[in-house]
Length: 514
Image (cartoon, rainbow, N blue to C red; front, side):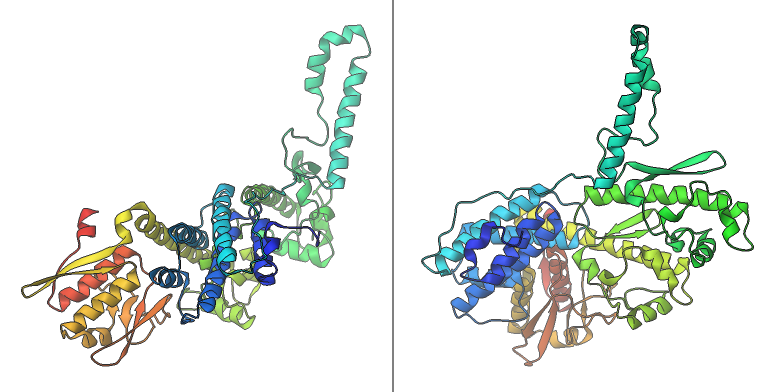
């Protein structure tokens, strides 16, 4: 497998590292579309960095992919077809990094096609003359539906038994008329679904007082985490100390009498555990189906609920500024060098193991994680609607009036708009510094915690600016910091608020139109 060829092997003479990243992108298209889309951004950003070096252009370590695109386009290095392809990869990558929705194979394939245009342009313009770019080729899916040998053996034995029983029923002519009815009444001990995914074949049954639970194959040796069994947690811990009930395969066929392995427990505990085991199996089947339907995604699970972990959510720091009401848990997590959300265990109930941390604390954390995920998804959807839903937002502008003069301040992006606006303010000798010194809050009002512009790149809640640009004041030589992780609407509203407070009449046609 190590020597297996891949499509972008032809760029190895240019950059072995770039070729290997391309290989992983190809492999992830059908296993994790989100991963492919997210990391395709990194791939094209690396290409643009090499273009910037080849053209001996100034490099700004703080610039992002959008900044690099704008600079190269403004200087005439990008033709329209490549500019569109680069923006497509960038925008789809942003969506995948921030939005928790399910991403389709078709989206990854479109990004793959855009990457081909970019790579072909890069090789033809900047690569060695002896490197030939092959024709575009769609990647082949490598998903295989295979049963584990043990599961396959069980399925075959069950089907063979069903076949044998049916043959016995058809030994005489008189029984032929009853064949259809006979076949309907035959029930194999192991259920076989016609369209079952691997892992869902019933491997065994566990009973208690006449009731039964079917255990699917994928749970055959599952670890029975005590924290997953709210009412039976201590019971399972005690059983585990006696080397009982640690994994599914250790459970007896009948749970009656399980309590006899430990002292001071009764048959009622067996019954409660049986009930919770049924809930556990149901939850695990839901999780299994979720993982199969959304392959390559990272999830956090809490009881019957789950959360998709996006790249943006994974990078949120585990601090008291981000998560309230759980200081002890945060302190212990940080002590174990778990500093970001993405480092948390997939099964969140495990966190209840920490000292003075109960299930209620874990639930608080999970609810705050869900809230952050929803907020980021909503913000991303707003940004997407303004970026791609309406062409009018591609050019941002506001009309300003000071005295008798009317001016239109324009910008092709939020940072560009802000810098043009600040230039205009200083050109008219308006008292900008005093307002920046206080910090201008993002949005049309002052109710938020995020600054749009300040003397330091730190928000009111002590969080650092997410995406930063700087502006050097022409009047005071002071450096102003701009938070540019802003959707176009907020950028316009905030600049309009700042101008209004400086005594400038402002009209925003784009907002009035929407």
